[in-house]
Length: 431
Image 1 (tube, rainbow, N blue to C red):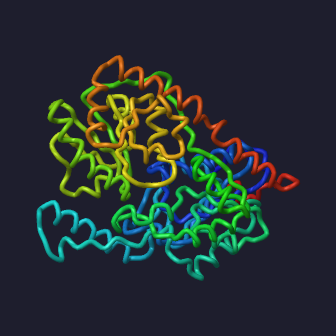
Image 2 (tube, helix red, strand yellow; image 1 turned 90 degrees about the vertical axis):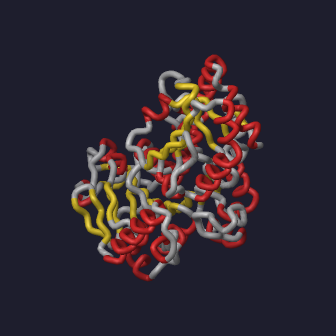
Image 3 (cartoon, rainbow, N blue to C red; image 1 turned 180 degrees about the vertical axis):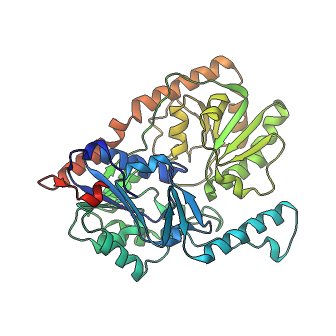
């Protein structure tokens, strides 16, 4: 899949930047995908040409097809091993993926009907980002990287293998999360692979630079991974023109089907939601995103799961308060930045604010105890108070999370590592 773009209109580029990823990415459908696309956009704006190479068909998971959204056009080329393309659609060639999808659908239906036994057993595929590399994966990278690589960037530490395969090129790893810090925090329910501290440091040490999404993790790199250069690149915001105080009776949570989101919502349903409904029976909670899959029987009264939503704009404009009740996790909580940029009043836990406490000071209601969390939400029923917090949130997004501020260090590193001469694109790369 090839795309023409303005920075290559004359067949010149400062250099080709190859992203190697094994996450299922079809657009800005979740935080990690949105972050990768933002970095690719920063590459383009700096005058380089981004490419995406995905060497493992396991990224399809147990769903046999996915549709590429328009934002994937940021990549000049995008190649996935083991799939077929039909227009914007990507289809897995392995028939076992389709069988797994059917099994998952039947399992969810059985659970909703309250059935038990083998019909409700579910067998998720392995976490594709962390599965061991195969010789076929390695061969694919060696073959497809030729001609599109001046700088190589691995998406997650688990893709450090790609840097070993392309040792002659400057390299970086997008860290996303500090995985070893999550170990033991989710009672074995975390949706990512375990990675001990020593192994994670060893993987990160393979790169010339490591891209951290928040300041505490950048500091960890500076101290514990001195062989690499830490690059701080928080997720950039795209602020609205005005704050949006919304409807005081409507709450919103947005998230994908990951253990921190599921467990955070479970805590809210059990500890916080009854207190809110007791004092404000008209209050409702809209939940958007694939996190709905973690609640096959739905939520308590007043909670509505909407699943994947193509346009979150109406949800943000209507909501009075965005909540982030996370109890564990690492990395920058990207939906927090999105809520700030939407000019929303936000109530969040300290876990949500990790690494951006200074930037969010006075712009987010920060509470951890269940009673305090409920009280903060109820207090924002006051229209003036809610508008003031929404205004502060939008100000924080503009001041601290602009693309220029977030990606300046990353683009400076690209400039340092660029080839001495611009490369003409081949006819195949131009499409």
